[in-house]
Image (cartoon, rainbow, N blue to C red; front, side, top):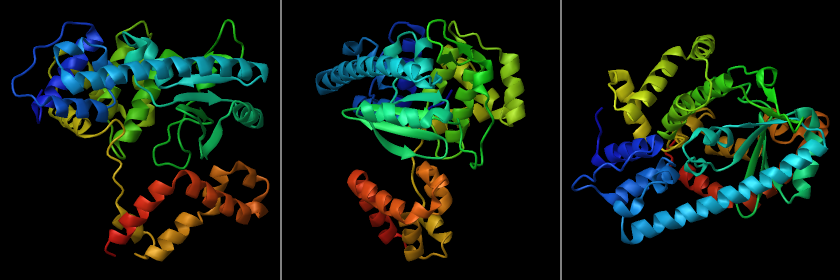
Length: 366
């Protein structure tokens, strides 16, 4: 494997040591430790690095930052788990069936749960019980921050974030593989409303989730850690069945490269040219890519008119408004009122991002 800089190479070596629970690799001469810290943050693998004996690598402000981060992240993890346990009881009381997804499942297959960073808890739920779910979340002090095509997102201070999914992917997106997780899930022995995602389906979903980000804004090396953790633990993945699903979905080649690359990275194996390109791309991206918006391209969809673009941003099409505000499905005549509600919500909660977008639009020469 080749690396564009020593910090990227050493980051991979540290991840390998942590995932395999092996001794630290020797510190290369001339490595920029500040750059290494920033890279681990960008890739959101800070928790994996913090699980290592960091005092043998870092010192001074770098070591203090990592220790403080590790302590804060542990506190956050315990608080989120406590909130989740209380929420489970309420979901069961209301008869809402649910299933944990993504990081809250995958972290169980890491050597230590705290190694797997996650900004929120993702849950698949029975959308026929949406009204009951909204009442539960409101009673627990959460506000509904986003209601889009496939999920309802909730937030409560200081850091509690839950995403309740109706579907795994946007139905109208270019990449939208079908998953019927409920039919293969295992019902919990003690909680009849809780279901556990099938190991093979979880593995397929993880690779599909990686592909979705890789094909749009990009993604980082944490996905390789997830793939490796799922394959090298007590997780029972049927690889033949998984590749049959990848073939059905149409990402067989991508899946083969991603899985082979994950195993090569953590076992110091050989990789192909395509896999080298993938690794370069992952290391140059953040955990979910760089998210750089091409406003010139966006404006071209509106005849290069900034006024038309801004008008549509303030007043989205009714299809998008129905996705954000589900009440409009039954009462479309309330659309003008919800435009006003949306505007006040954006001013209250997203004023900084709105100002940044306006600034970029002004700078765009069209």
